[in-house]
Length: 404
Image 1 (cartoon, rainbow, N blue to C red):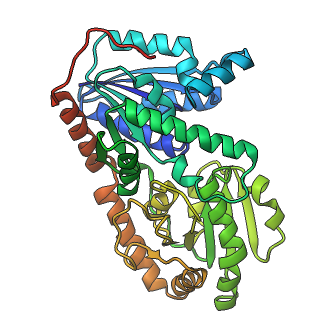
Image 2 (image 1 turned 90 degrees about the horizontal axis):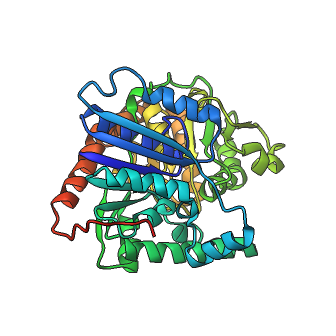
């Protein structure tokens, strides 16, 4: 197959949540002998782009005949602010569509022939309107993540309004949609019951996740991008509500919170007892090597949580909520502990800190779960099945297509 993949960031194994998935998808398709054209519309640094190219040029990726064409396109926004605002009013969240160089590049690749146009995230969806065999991939829905947020500023209200408009337009405009979880599928069906939807989970390249030795100290941890509302809400809940209860039950415990913009958003809590904040770690393994237990309890956040999956892959026991474990086919108390109230969550943390045998059992069971269900092979098997169903489906095959 010749698959054109459009992403809003470069595919990097240690980038953000989406970038890690892009990397898994592309490398696994190459390993199976498929031709992949990866078109990344990015505003990332030259260093990140250079690292991506190095990762994707590693020996052995194309040993079965796979071919990769990688376009790292510098996203260009309209310099005329009024026109840019008008375009976003007409087509909300359509910055990729507004870049004529990007749309021209995509048109040239489509004209060479393709089997599937794989569009990652809602922002790329505008490029698939009117294009046969276009697949929109939805990792989360802003309309879920922001709907229950209180005391939103005017700008946040506007962003939610635009997200709702974009979601409705794209789900009615693109027939084929892949979603990570049943909850996301239910939301999509409520917007457009006539769409064709598949639930396919995220995957981690487990070869890059060596299990860390069990932590020697009773460190309770959380890692995440703090500019993302679900991660920030999880950190604030842990610091202000769960952590005091943990300290009551296990006084010698320490709290370690890390991630992008951790200091910026959480600095007001830095004087809390036994709390360490670490910002912008060079490698997530630096965090997971220290944590005895990870606690992730977001107030709201749709889709699969990569940090929870990573903790499982690294062998760090997880205490979380239903929101935190969404899309992960777990057995409560075996691969992780799932609870909802602050008291229950703190109780599970103390239980794990007090019981090293249970921590060892849980870390092994969680790693097996990731290997068996959320590693590249089983997940990309499902993606290829989706592609094959799309290709085989009766549909019009117009000679012309456009990025409108």
